[in-house]
Amino acid sequence: LGKGTNSPLSPGYHPECDVTPLLTDEEANYYQSLIGVTRWIVEMGRIDICCEVSQLSSFVAMPREGHLQQLYHLVAYLKRYHNARLVLDPSYPEIDDDDFIVQDWQNFYGQIEEEIPSNAPEARGNEFIIRVFVDASHADDKVNRRSRTGFIVFLNSSPVYWYSKKQGGAETSTFGSEFIAMKTACEYVRGLRYSLRMMGIPVNNPAFIYGDNSSVLWNVSVPDSMLKKKSHGIAYHFCREGCARDEWLATYIDTKINPSDLLTKALPSGEDRERKVKSLLYDIYK
Image (cartoon, rainbow, N blue to C red):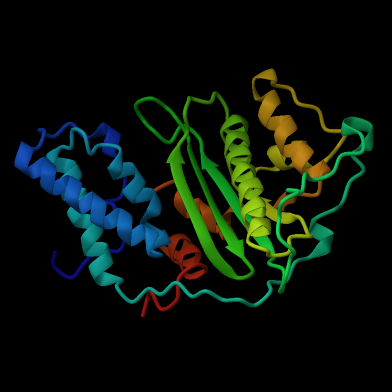
């Protein structure tokens, strides 16, 4: 492995385009074992390799020599940056209320409220602030042109869930792929709010969702906005009704500081990647 590498995958590498020979049965079994180890490492907190591990995991059924070499490359990256720490910070983040404008949705959805489970225990203790950073990489797969969804969920200042997965179908526009990513993140937030309530944790405020696609955020958070593509109508109303119920609010964040960008594409080494990794992991570049 040498001294290690600066990025999990080689620059410009796309595993779906790899045409090197298939691995033997014994080598394929070894590849699958390494994938299992790296997936466990991601679960333990190495958010910075989540996207790359997800990409390589797509080929566990028929891995090629190039995939195994890239897996060695990823392990070399972990060897070089082994000091990374995921810190669970309970402090409350600063939320700028001016970024999240509460709208009047009554003319569109009537007087609706969030559904609270009737069998939830009495809430005790302090409430969490839920933040979500969401992004999508349009047509990320060079073969079937499917996009990739990525999002990170924070409770207070602690990342507690990270997600990177290829979308189920090809989207014809960036807007479409970003809207699917927003819907996926909102679905998780709804489930998380339910789980917290059932554990007796108070959940009174909406979740704060940050995304970097202005069109999606406009459709989600502004009552008078109109959807021009019927194919996204279900995601459109699902996300908007969540805003109307005060389950979540959405606002814009610049791509340069959106940490979920790490979960949608294999970022090359450089200032952009380092800035986003540092926002999630401590001491990684010591």
